[in-house]
Length: 361
Ligand SMILES: NC(=O)c1ccc[n+]([C@@H]2O[C@H](COP(=O)([O-])OP(=O)(O)OC[C@H]3O[C@@H](n4cnc5c(N)ncnc54)[C@H](O)[C@@H]3O)[C@@H](O)[C@H]2O)c1
Ligand SMILES: CC(C)[C@H](C(=O)O)[C@@H](O)C(=O)O
Ligand SMILES: [Mg+2]
Picture (spheres, protein in one colour):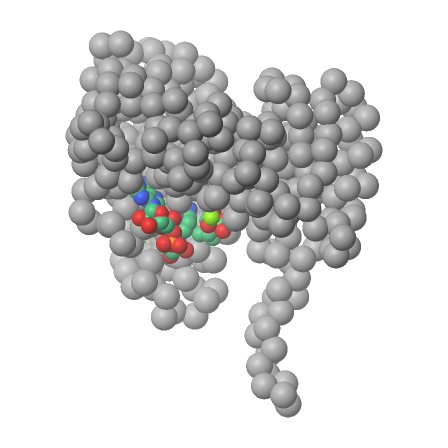
């Protein structure tokens, strides 16, 4: 029997709630598909700061290093916003995790499910059939570029972030996007700001060269401001959106909302090998944390992506995704996607409905 070790980092806010809802489904998947899962829980983010003084304790890193994948909840929240920026959960835990494990490609799959068309802020005829993948570069750009920081000058404070990319960083994530497009509708759109940014020019040049290896995939270019607008005007035109780090962050939240809720968007952060960090695109949601109403779908779909990409347990991944769809079809909704005539339930009951359909499809 295959045995896999998974680092479980629930974190802050709704993280522990959606994680608690997800683990029984993962355990059921192991039982049903005949593998063993060692789920190793570890502290991260604000919870780790409160317990140990550090957002990413060495013990947590060790658990991650000994695992095949990380299932992540969310980190951050008002409680830790007064800390120096480099000590806050996002910058001291999440970004270092991505960087330490070389997870340069973040896949964010967004589909407008027919059951949820009434939850879209768009007109039904615009939202129907939307199915796109944001491939977000995750370890470069403004998030990590040096120099970074705030210095005092004789005119007051001066804050610096650096947008820098090297050819090799663009090449490797571009290949991920082209490969993904091959298995989809064979259309990659590079989102950039090549009318202003030097780094965008390097993205365009590099993508054009890489595209020669993927002549079966069509390539398009769009400035990011136009892309944000096209996403609400006609999102069906897109297949794979390839973005540098910050543009991908912003556009993926927008795209998630078009299909109902940020609480439904999972993501896979991948590197060269099979190891991955699976993180909902949304955050700790302080406005609803502790109320038992968070949508656990993103976390549960993260578990499915983990099974697919890091463990190669495709059948288990598909079965979780099918149970999730069946739960929507049967009318279950969390408050963020509530609609007339549907059964609005909390985090636990929604996850239980998925588990029931997973066990008895
Ligand atoms: N991966 C992460 O750990 C991650 C990602 C994004 C934001 N954050 C952090 O989370 C904190 C809050 O940030 P924010 O409020 O800007 O963004 P957020 O994503 O936490 O919340 C934005 C909105 O989406 C809603 N939402 C998000 N996930 C939901 C879910 N599963 N179910 C229902 N509704 C959901 C929230 O209630 C809120 O109204 C910040 O500290 C931020 O840095 C962490
Ligand atoms: C919490 C934050 C650092 C993070 C990011 O910007 O990458 C989040 O918004 C995301 O989308 O994963
Ligand atoms: Mg984000």
